[in-house]
Length: 290
Length: 343
Image: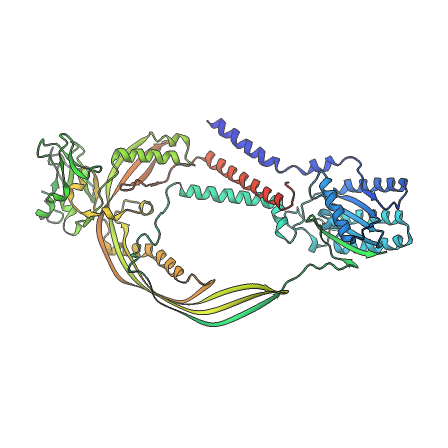
C-alpha cells in the first residue's frame, strides 16, 4: 500500500520537474553556429557576412542572447519598427526556444531608417537609453556607407552592454538572484517582469508559488473540514415572518468625481520607445535615419 | 422512589425506546406501547430535591453508578434501563425532546459510510471496524428565542467608473444610510452539558424541530441522559454570541446596494429572551486507531457525523502535490494560450 503511494507521489514530482527544465539544458543546446546575419539587402560581401556571423555567434553564446543584423530593401515601404517586429516574430517561431532573447539591428534601405531593438533578456540589458547610444555610435558609419564597420560596432557595443547590469529601474526584480555590481557579467537569467499581467502569469516562479499556495490552502480547508462543518446559517433560526427591515432611509448627500488620464503607448519615431511586435513580444528600441 | 424502570406488563422484560417505530418496545416479547398516550410516572410523583444520594436498581438492587448529571442510564450489573426521576422533574424537567430516529445499527452503518468518504483519513481507519463503544445520549440543550431590535446609521457609497476619451472617470455618490431591523431568532440551540464539547455540539446542528415532542420519560428508556449543568441565564451570553454573527450578516444584507459602507453607529438591543429546556439525541462513538482513542458525535436525528478523524500525512501530501501540480498545469496552459511559452 505504502509503496503505491510513494510511487504515485514520486511520479507527480517528476512531472512537476519536467515542467521546469534546468537552464543549462538551454545553454548547451545552442552550441553550433547558426545564421544571425540576415543581409537581405546585400550590403555585405560573403566574406564580410561570414566574419560578422562568427562574431555574432560568439557573443550570442556567451550571453544566451542572439545578436542579429537584418537588412532589407523593403520594397513595400513597411515601417521599420513593423519590419523589425515581423522579423522577430518569424525568428522566434522558428527558434527552439520560446521568447528567445535577442538584440537586433534592422536596416530599412528603402526609407534609410534603422532600428536597434532588444527582446527579453536583450530588452533588459539593451534598454531604450542604451539602444539610443548604440544607434548614435553607428549612424555615422551607416551614413558613410561603411556597413561592415557599423555592424561590427553594433555587435561590440551590444556585447559590452550585455555584460553590464542595467540601471536599477530596469532591474527585473522578481526572482532575480542577489545583487551584482555594475560591470560584473551576469550569467544567470530570469525573465524580466513586465508591467502587464501576461508576463507575470508566464513567470515560472510565480506559477510555482501560486500552485503551491493553492495546494496548501485546498488541503488546509480539507483538513479543517474533515471533522464536519457548521452547516447552519442565519436563516436556519430566523423567524422569517417576523424578521426583516422595519424602516430604512437612504439620503443622497453628494457626489465626488475623480479623473485620471489614461497613458497611451505612443511610439514616436526619431529616438526610441520600444513597444510590442505583432506577435505580442515586448521590446526595447531606438530608431533613426541615416 | 426516584428510580423509574419500564417493565413489560405482559412478560416483565425491559422496555426500551425504539427509534425506528417511535414506540416503547419490549425486548423480550416485542410488545409496543405508544408513548404519547402513556401517562408519565414523573407527572404523578413529587420528588424532593436531591432526595437520593444513592440510587438503587429496582430490578437487582445494585447501587447504580451515576455521576451528578446523569438522568438516565443502564444498570451496570443487570443491564436494566433506568431513569432517575428526581433529576428530570421540577426545575430539571425538560419541556420537549427529539427522540432518536437513528438506531444503533443505523448509526454504526452511517459512521462506517462516513469513514469511507474521508479523503484524508488513513486507509486503516476507513474500514471503521474498530468501533470501541457506541452510546446514545440525550444531551440537554437550551433552545433560546431571542428577539432583537437593531438600528444602524452609516455612510454608504456607490461607485461608478467609466472611460470617456482619454480619461478614466470615477464617480462616487455618498448616501446617509439608516436601517432599522427586527430580527427574531427562534430555537437557537446551546448545549447545557459541561462534559460535551461545545464546538462539536455546534457542528451537529441542525436538528429538525418538526419532530420536537412533549417530553415523556419513556423516550429515555435504554439510553443515557444528562441533566443540564448550566442553566439558561448562565448560557445566555453564549446564545447571544451565536446569533451576533447572524445579526451582522443580516445588517450587511440590508445595505447590499452600496459599494462600501461605513457604520457610524449600531444599536442592537435584545427585546425578548426566553429559553426552553430540551433533550436532543446524540450518538457518541469512541474509536480505537493506532492505540489512540478518537471520539465522534453523531446527530441522532439526521446522522450527521462530527469529530476529529486521524489524518494521514501521506494523503495530505499526495493531495497537496496533486492539487499543486494540477494548478501549475492550468497556469501553464493559460500562459500558453496567452501567447507566452509553455516553459
